[in-house]
Image 1 (cartoon, protein in one colour):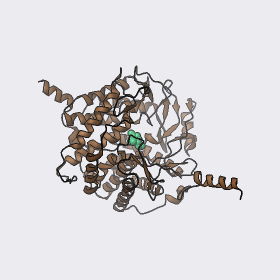
Image 2: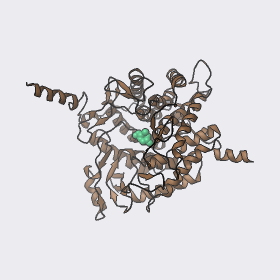
Image 3: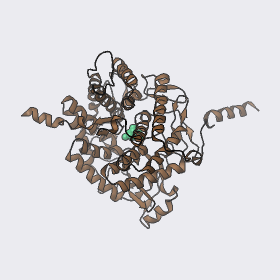
Length: 511
Ligand code: DMJ
């Protein structure tokens, strides 16, 4: 073989050759296996530890995320220990006092937000602020006895949370109250920062900022979150839906093409629902009620054997035939609302896609699915736009999250079979240093990538674990108490959220 041919083969091996476990046929993996909830729960526990211990050993707590193929870490999220903070309440779910205490002690000794780094306001809120607050509530709960440090816990995580929130708050200093997308943790909004923000990035603060207001007695956080959410809501389309991006100066939509429940809008709707309930807040409740009506009227696409929530055009309302992976949170909300039939049908339609491709691709056009022709004929002569194809599956939690919420309501065993299918697919992503995201899903290539997002540990494994725990006969405290899951699956006990809101505290102070 000549030198050039050898080079080509070497490059092919490095770049394209499938790693072990890649390119599998779904039929060979989704095989019948006994539904044994306690064994499957233990399997999830060991999967979580494989990811968490690999992060600690190969990335180190100082890094944000693990790179499971190269067995090292990255700090692309500011170098603020994202995976550690994101994982703490999962350690509490597992009852792992040793790792929980070690993690908290490590953060109290090492984590500082006084860093010259630019971070995403949205991601830092949901992963870090949410993670710190959830862990603070666990550590403060003496009866749970999960924090076993040398000294009693004295609120250090809450101090970190306040320090971080005050840095994020600088992003909201805009004419509309809509936040910039990025802040520098040390110096505020960076010069030249884009003045465009995504809808979800403007309205996914109510739970974290609301709880912070309750814990500190300082109303400013909760008010800031609400002002931004109300501003966003006031910009909804004629059909009552949000689009994806708007400017922070006037709140004008910049990309007026798409409305849907996928990325860039998803958690805005989720937080209308969750904040309305968590805080008994009529303003958020009304936003959700109207959002729900609009979603049902404009995004629902169904036949007798499928139900999808697709996208629509902001101006014309014409349907765009995307089924987006991130929108899989929606049936979980429907389940919590009590629309069990729609929740069940949507979840089963997502599961059909998983059976076809092995994983849920980021976006697939309805016409690609077995029931695609039927879906299109249901639309009849109504104009519609073809959807997009976005490949890849970064081990997202949304489908198992919804399965969990529906199982809470129905205890329907068919849901457990779908969860088992998700777990069977996750087994294929395991490598010696963790779990890998997947690319090439739509082509059944299943190429493993050097990426393990922190939400794999904080959400995907948490919902799976809690599901099997519920099915086995609940042992975990989360399944025995009333809790609210943030969009990053951080656990906020309802009793903490039902304390008087800061607004009321302010009123009390004024008496
Ligand atoms: C998580 O970080 C959060 O759930 C967020 O709201 C959007 N999706 C990712 C996981 O898919």
